[in-house]
Length: 587
Image (cartoon, rainbow, N blue to C red; front, side, top):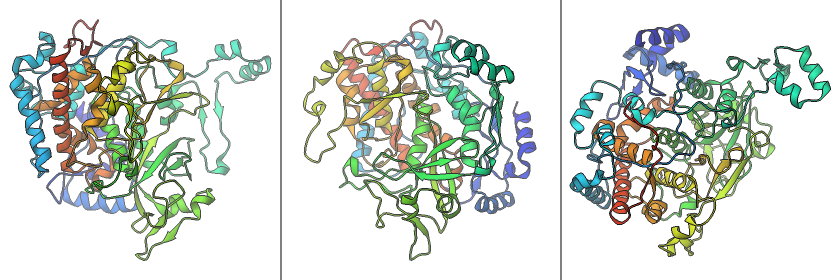
């Protein structure tokens, strides 16, 4: 209950929890947040007051990532069936943001056309939906939907909606990516020597005695409660999704990323821009991307998509958006303030990285590393003077334990200043893709279209490859990795990102239903995204996305729904029904 959760936070964190507050748009003073809902289920924090805020601000300057653990309701399963299909329904109604902000005339006019077109379609817009689904998404009766969520957090209401709680069969042994080996497994597969060693230790404990290296001395057993959050995250990966949104470990994992002491920092190889691999005392790791430009800065219109900066806030926002769409295919990402000197420069063992540190004329500690783009003294990453904003993404299991396959996207761009990709020259390109494995059967094509919808909403043109876990073969989800070039421009949209949807005219039923739901005033995407991003630790510094970016989400959502509507007018087989077998999606 609300009261119990609130008291628990007080017990765990004392006076610190009363100081958690978030800047609300249009205000210079922090406003109290009554509750946070990382997984849509009851995380409550008491009111904050002005004196409390000033205390918290001073504390934050000393411990920038000290946030209380979030308390969630017990674990509940909500995956979608592995071999099922997809479709979507619902009315679109209001596709604009709740806060009117100046936008370019072109973008504003396009938004109005999309909204009006969807509005005037009337009943034809939902001709594909069943009566139960129309009722589910409030088609034609949005007032009732508004009344149902009035007085509640929109984020909580969204995650309590039946479309985000679809039934799912109990996972079988092979449905998990990793599992803890039991004593019986060891006896079946191990040598006689291993069996004798296991017999000595009946508790199957794993001991670490590496305290001299700075790592924690820990004892892990087959009991999941003894595992650190990063290991529980790895053990929770299934063939359906990276994480279960209702798993209480999600909150523990994000808190761990935001607060754990940093033990090591080295530059990660590969990729075109600077990123670091961060190590924690409990053997966990995270991928760090630093702030490169202000939240309000837009990508230069003269830059090609492959020359753009990677943004730390884009990685954070992409994780939240992916979760709001019900995909759960991006590893958890959290923002954090770190000390460039004590948490990178003084502890790194990477000599290539350490050689690039310097003090700027303004007295700020800077570094630039080694990479293809923007790793030069002319484009340094600088603290203020030591404090630096970064994003930290949970690492996936090591490739030796869980191999991944990299797939070249059929709709990959040319990455050339002069050449066009095949799909940009051939309007029937999808016909060829549909005949090519693995897109000629199963869910791979609609998986790819899900990813295209996500990329269009956040304006990410840099999707040349995607990955899957080899263990699950072709019947599994796609990993939505590396989203740093998203959210570059809010004043214009890039229609070509939707080419897979436009050319193939195919979309999951569940995806379409959720998109319609997020177009309703009571579940407006920009409002829910704003509320979700307010949970991130960096939200106390500044909103992770500016209001123009949030407004662009609503505009682009209207465009996606219009593209689907156009497809339905020209084709009969648009909806891929992944909800077949769910007799009552309203239950």
